[in-house]
Figure 1 (cartoon, helix red, strand yellow):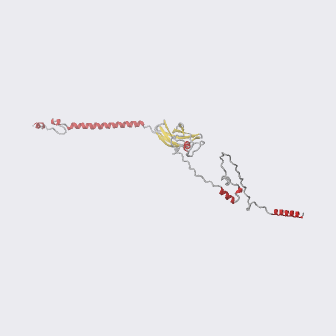
Figure 2 (cartoon, rainbow, N blue to C red):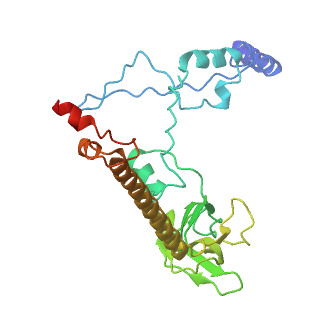
Figure 3 (cartoon, one colour):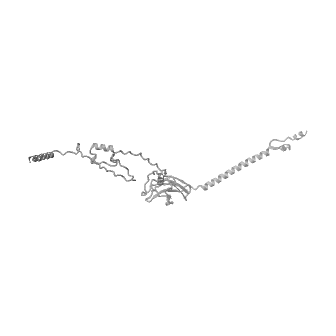
Length: 295
């Protein structure tokens, strides 16, 4: 009985001593151990399966998985993670596509959208169809007596059609037919000679039309021009007078040379005239020349 009491007393003393000691940490550094990865045991693959086999001896985190914070608390663990993850190598930069061969001022120019779709090129920046077009740039104007031809350059906007508007100064505007977005050239006829006109090129889409001006700007959408005077009757009259003068001059020269040569033949005389004693401009004939010859 006394032996049992001693064993119990020793057990209580030992338990009391254990309660006084501080709780031990999981590691010598005082940090919790990382949660071990669960190893999935591979089951034998069925025959005919295309799944790749996994090497159980080399297991690492994929590069796209970010480690949890508990793995990055320790410097050693973070260095091990950096050594395990393979850095991404950036690919070679993709070359930029070339610019489209698009000319704003070329007549019957193919739309840049079609060029880009065909050759994967870049188009110049333009405003969308929800905004009214900017004004086109009137390039050249050729004027005759009763007509004119105009060339323009397309704006940096979405254009559905063009229209030519013109008016005599002090008169009403006349609007020409609608032209599709590929047009850069138009001719107009039926104008009055020696008359001043205001010509304007207007671009339109579903949002509206481009503005116009008074024609005084150098590269604006409008231009003040004056048709040529009617000079054709005067040209015909002048050409007729010149032709008549040339004919008269030629006739006078021909008559002069022909008459002069004829007079020279008459005044010079012949051998018969000299022997017959007919006087001429070349001197008098010798009357004794025939008789002396007979002797």
